[in-house]
Image 1 (cartoon, one colour):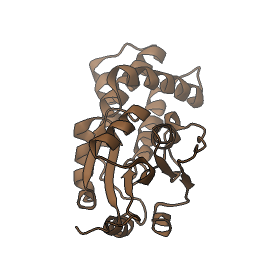
Image 2 (image 1 turned 45 degrees about the vertical axis):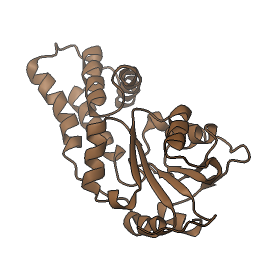
Image 3 (image 1 turned 90 degrees about the horizontal axis):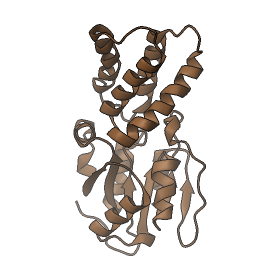
Image 4 (image 1 turned 30 degrees about the vertical axis):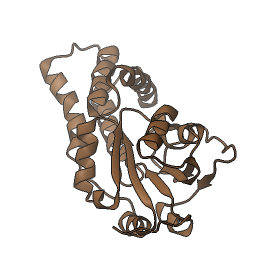
Length: 236
Protein backbone atom coordinates (compact mmCIF):
# COMPACT_ATOMS: atom_id res chain seq x y z
CA UNK A 1 0.00 0.00 0.00
CA UNK A 2 1.45 3.35 -1.06
CA UNK A 3 1.98 5.88 1.66
CA UNK A 4 3.32 9.38 1.75
CA UNK A 5 7.01 9.54 2.50
CA UNK A 6 7.11 13.23 3.35
CA UNK A 7 8.01 14.74 6.68
CA UNK A 8 4.28 14.64 7.50
CA UNK A 9 4.30 10.84 7.67
CA UNK A 10 3.93 9.51 11.21
CA UNK A 11 3.94 6.05 12.76
CA UNK A 12 0.86 5.21 14.80
CA UNK A 13 1.19 2.34 17.26
CA UNK A 14 -2.42 1.34 17.85
CA UNK A 15 -3.81 -0.66 20.76
CA UNK A 16 -6.42 -3.36 20.04
CA UNK A 17 -8.63 -4.33 23.01
CA UNK A 18 -11.15 -1.57 23.80
CA UNK A 19 -9.51 0.70 21.23
CA UNK A 20 -10.35 -1.16 18.01
CA UNK A 21 -12.87 -3.67 19.36
CA UNK A 22 -14.89 -4.43 22.48
CA UNK A 23 -13.15 -6.55 25.08
CA UNK A 24 -13.70 -5.63 28.71
CA UNK A 25 -17.51 -5.67 28.50
CA UNK A 26 -17.33 -9.45 28.06
CA UNK A 27 -15.14 -9.83 31.14
CA UNK A 28 -17.53 -7.61 33.12
CA UNK A 29 -20.48 -9.81 32.17
CA UNK A 30 -18.55 -12.95 33.13
CA UNK A 31 -17.56 -11.39 36.47
CA UNK A 32 -21.18 -10.41 37.21
CA UNK A 33 -22.27 -13.98 36.46
CA UNK A 34 -19.48 -15.36 38.66
CA UNK A 35 -20.40 -13.11 41.60
CA UNK A 36 -24.04 -14.13 41.25
CA UNK A 37 -22.98 -17.78 41.10
CA UNK A 38 -20.83 -17.42 44.22
CA UNK A 39 -23.80 -15.81 46.01
CA UNK A 40 -21.74 -14.90 49.06
CA UNK A 41 -23.86 -14.53 52.18
CA UNK A 42 -21.61 -12.12 54.08
CA UNK A 43 -19.83 -10.01 51.50
CA UNK A 44 -21.54 -7.63 49.09
CA UNK A 45 -21.00 -7.96 45.33
CA UNK A 46 -18.76 -4.88 45.49
CA UNK A 47 -16.64 -6.46 48.21
CA UNK A 48 -16.34 -9.69 46.24
CA UNK A 49 -15.26 -7.67 43.21
CA UNK A 50 -12.54 -5.93 45.21
CA UNK A 51 -11.19 -9.31 46.32
CA UNK A 52 -11.29 -10.57 42.74
CA UNK A 53 -9.38 -7.45 41.61
CA UNK A 54 -6.66 -8.21 44.16
CA UNK A 55 -6.47 -11.84 43.09
CA UNK A 56 -6.27 -10.80 39.44
CA UNK A 57 -3.29 -8.61 40.25
CA UNK A 58 -1.60 -11.62 41.86
CA UNK A 59 -2.40 -13.86 38.88
CA UNK A 60 -1.03 -11.36 36.38
CA UNK A 61 2.37 -11.64 38.06
CA UNK A 62 2.46 -15.42 37.63
CA UNK A 63 0.26 -16.00 34.57
CA UNK A 64 0.38 -12.74 32.62
CA UNK A 65 -2.64 -11.32 30.84
CA UNK A 66 -5.39 -13.28 29.14
CA UNK A 67 -8.14 -15.81 29.72
CA UNK A 68 -5.90 -18.36 31.45
CA UNK A 69 -4.92 -15.80 34.06
CA UNK A 70 -8.52 -14.65 34.43
CA UNK A 71 -9.71 -18.23 34.95
CA UNK A 72 -7.06 -18.79 37.63
CA UNK A 73 -8.28 -15.62 39.35
CA UNK A 74 -11.89 -16.81 39.37
CA UNK A 75 -10.91 -20.20 40.80
CA UNK A 76 -8.68 -18.66 43.50
CA UNK A 77 -11.37 -16.16 44.45
CA UNK A 78 -13.92 -18.97 44.79
CA UNK A 79 -11.52 -20.97 46.94
CA UNK A 80 -10.84 -17.92 49.11
CA UNK A 81 -14.48 -17.01 49.69
CA UNK A 82 -16.63 -20.11 49.38
CA UNK A 83 -17.47 -22.39 52.29
CA UNK A 84 -18.04 -25.17 49.77
CA UNK A 85 -15.11 -27.30 48.60
CA UNK A 86 -14.15 -26.82 44.96
CA UNK A 87 -15.62 -29.93 43.35
CA UNK A 88 -15.04 -30.96 39.75
CA UNK A 89 -18.51 -29.69 38.90
CA UNK A 90 -17.90 -26.29 40.46
CA UNK A 91 -14.50 -26.08 38.76
CA UNK A 92 -16.15 -26.75 35.40
CA UNK A 93 -18.83 -24.13 36.06
CA UNK A 94 -16.21 -21.50 36.89
CA UNK A 95 -14.25 -22.32 33.75
CA UNK A 96 -17.48 -21.85 31.84
CA UNK A 97 -17.54 -18.15 32.69
CA UNK A 98 -14.19 -17.68 30.95
CA UNK A 99 -15.30 -19.76 27.97
CA UNK A 100 -18.16 -17.37 27.32
CA UNK A 101 -15.55 -14.67 26.70
CA UNK A 102 -13.56 -16.80 24.27
CA UNK A 103 -16.71 -17.52 22.29
CA UNK A 104 -17.54 -13.86 21.68
CA UNK A 105 -17.20 -12.56 18.12
CA UNK A 106 -14.89 -9.61 17.52
CA UNK A 107 -17.12 -6.53 17.67
CA UNK A 108 -15.43 -3.48 16.16
CA UNK A 109 -15.98 -0.14 17.84
CA UNK A 110 -17.65 2.65 15.81
CA UNK A 111 -15.91 4.01 12.70
CA UNK A 112 -12.83 1.81 13.09
CA UNK A 113 -12.65 0.44 9.54
CA UNK A 114 -12.98 3.75 7.63
CA UNK A 115 -10.64 5.52 10.05
CA UNK A 116 -7.93 2.89 9.61
CA UNK A 117 -8.46 2.96 5.85
CA UNK A 118 -7.83 6.70 5.82
CA UNK A 119 -4.87 6.64 8.20
CA UNK A 120 -3.10 3.73 6.49
CA UNK A 121 -2.98 5.69 3.24
CA UNK A 122 -1.02 8.49 4.88
CA UNK A 123 0.92 6.93 7.73
CA UNK A 124 2.55 3.72 8.95
CA UNK A 125 0.29 1.79 11.32
CA UNK A 126 1.56 -0.88 13.72
CA UNK A 127 -0.82 -2.83 15.93
CA UNK A 128 0.55 -3.17 19.47
CA UNK A 129 -1.42 -5.37 21.86
CA UNK A 130 -0.57 -7.25 25.04
CA UNK A 131 -1.53 -10.66 26.34
CA UNK A 132 -1.48 -14.29 25.32
CA UNK A 133 -0.08 -14.62 21.80
CA UNK A 134 -2.61 -17.18 20.63
CA UNK A 135 -5.59 -15.26 21.99
CA UNK A 136 -4.52 -11.90 20.64
CA UNK A 137 -3.40 -13.14 17.22
CA UNK A 138 -6.74 -14.95 16.90
CA UNK A 139 -8.65 -11.74 17.57
CA UNK A 140 -6.50 -9.81 15.12
CA UNK A 141 -7.17 -12.42 12.46
CA UNK A 142 -10.93 -12.53 13.09
CA UNK A 143 -11.19 -8.73 13.13
CA UNK A 144 -10.26 -8.46 9.47
CA UNK A 145 -8.17 -5.38 10.23
CA UNK A 146 -4.67 -6.78 9.76
CA UNK A 147 -4.44 -5.52 6.17
CA UNK A 148 -4.29 -1.93 7.45
CA UNK A 149 -1.12 -2.56 9.49
CA UNK A 150 2.50 -2.74 8.44
CA UNK A 151 3.18 -5.04 11.42
CA UNK A 152 1.53 -6.61 14.46
CA UNK A 153 3.31 -6.62 17.82
CA UNK A 154 1.94 -8.90 20.56
CA UNK A 155 3.82 -8.28 23.79
CA UNK A 156 3.37 -9.91 27.23
CA UNK A 157 3.02 -6.51 28.87
CA UNK A 158 3.16 -2.84 27.94
CA UNK A 159 5.83 -0.85 29.71
CA UNK A 160 8.32 1.81 28.68
CA UNK A 161 11.01 -0.76 27.90
CA UNK A 162 8.72 -2.68 25.56
CA UNK A 163 7.83 0.54 23.74
CA UNK A 164 11.51 1.39 23.34
CA UNK A 165 12.08 -2.08 21.90
CA UNK A 166 9.25 -1.65 19.39
CA UNK A 167 10.70 1.71 18.33
CA UNK A 168 14.13 0.15 17.92
CA UNK A 169 12.88 -2.98 16.15
CA UNK A 170 11.06 -0.97 13.50
CA UNK A 171 13.70 1.78 13.29
CA UNK A 172 11.19 4.47 14.22
CA UNK A 173 11.81 8.13 14.95
CA UNK A 174 10.52 8.87 18.45
CA UNK A 175 9.21 12.37 17.72
CA UNK A 176 7.14 11.02 14.79
CA UNK A 177 5.78 8.01 16.65
CA UNK A 178 2.47 7.95 18.55
CA UNK A 179 0.85 5.33 20.78
CA UNK A 180 -2.94 5.34 20.42
CA UNK A 181 -5.04 3.64 23.09
CA UNK A 182 -7.65 3.69 25.84
CA UNK A 183 -5.52 2.72 28.84
CA UNK A 184 -3.54 5.32 30.78
CA UNK A 185 -1.63 2.55 32.56
CA UNK A 186 -0.64 0.49 29.52
CA UNK A 187 -0.96 2.72 26.46
CA UNK A 188 -0.37 6.33 27.40
CA UNK A 189 1.85 6.71 30.44
CA UNK A 190 4.55 4.14 29.54
CA UNK A 191 4.66 5.43 25.96
CA UNK A 192 5.29 8.98 27.15
CA UNK A 193 7.89 7.62 29.57
CA UNK A 194 9.58 5.88 26.62
CA UNK A 195 9.91 9.23 24.83
CA UNK A 196 7.19 8.84 22.20
CA UNK A 197 3.94 10.74 21.72
CA UNK A 198 0.53 9.44 22.74
CA UNK A 199 -3.15 9.74 21.84
CA UNK A 200 -5.67 8.91 24.55
CA UNK A 201 -9.00 7.61 23.26
CA UNK A 202 -11.04 6.80 26.38
CA UNK A 203 -13.46 3.87 26.57
CA UNK A 204 -16.33 3.96 29.05
CA UNK A 205 -15.67 0.37 30.14
CA UNK A 206 -11.89 0.33 30.46
CA UNK A 207 -10.78 -2.44 32.86
CA UNK A 208 -10.43 -1.14 36.41
CA UNK A 209 -6.86 -2.48 36.65
CA UNK A 210 -5.94 -0.23 33.71
CA UNK A 211 -7.12 2.91 35.51
CA UNK A 212 -4.38 5.38 36.33
CA UNK A 213 -4.04 9.13 36.38
CA UNK A 214 -3.09 10.38 32.94
CA UNK A 215 0.51 11.59 32.88
CA UNK A 216 1.53 14.93 31.45
CA UNK A 217 3.66 14.98 28.32
CA UNK A 218 7.14 16.35 28.95
CA UNK A 219 8.43 18.18 25.86
CA UNK A 220 9.26 17.26 23.21
CA UNK A 221 6.61 14.52 23.71
CA UNK A 222 3.03 15.41 22.85
CA UNK A 223 -0.27 14.10 24.21
CA UNK A 224 -3.61 14.31 22.42
CA UNK A 225 -6.87 13.53 24.20
CA UNK A 226 -9.72 12.69 21.84
CA UNK A 227 -13.36 11.76 22.27
CA UNK A 228 -13.37 9.02 19.65
CA UNK A 229 -11.10 6.99 17.39
CA UNK A 230 -12.62 8.67 14.33
CA UNK A 231 -11.21 12.03 15.49
CA UNK A 232 -7.74 10.79 14.54
CA UNK A 233 -8.43 11.83 10.94
CA UNK A 234 -8.56 15.46 12.11
CA UNK A 235 -5.02 15.27 13.46
CA UNK A 236 -3.15 12.87 11.16
